[in-house]
Length: 329
Image (tube, rainbow, N blue to C red; front, side, top):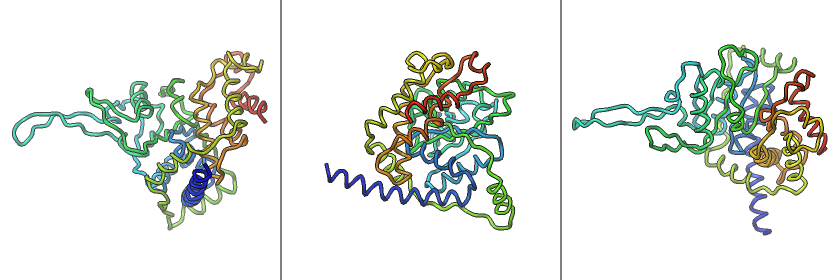
């Protein structure tokens, strides 16, 4: 047991050092989004996908490209539009004639066959196309003409969504939103940060991202995250948070009266993994209740909905989650 603990400690120390370098390299290119960068790395370390929500111009695309470079991942970008078809993402079969004159189908992989895929403005594609991508996210395979094709390892999707312009969009159904481990809200920078952005991004020089991690090292860290121990108090906090968010099970009267539907077991799984990943990023061997509180909003926000009466009273999902957090503080 002591040997196992020592092995985990050594691996965690090495991983934390690599992650510090990765965050520093990303921060040299993406300015003033430290919280967003940490959450994106948390989602990847947890082996999941993330939905980035923010208005245009907040460096969401740059973040994904920089993450791909720093984490050593092959990355591709797909601009989602209403006319985008599932085959444009997954790939398709084409009929070809061989040198011997025989005709046969050949599969041409789509852009989903990458390690880090940016799905830009995912809510602009039709539900059929959204479902094709989200199925690939969940099953890590693509089926075309009855043949299964495994996706590369590791495989992660960072999707973006514009919260303001909703004309001509197809909102993601709740069951599909649940496939995203975290929802990451990308806000406007502070005054000091925006001043820094103006000065540093409009000059003649351009900062390039530097690789800090290899795909093999990333997968080793993903395995390590699942080995980090979780204390009973943290486990109880996660269960309290998730179960009280469901109106049918909640012990909080306001939740029963305000929430239309709450998170399923996948939310608890996401919190378990994300809190471990956050602990590893911070150089700790196990998560704390503070990690649960810090990740409650990103994990639960897209997995809950308020009823009409609560919305009419001006309640928000964020305020409801804060009520849930107060119970475990």
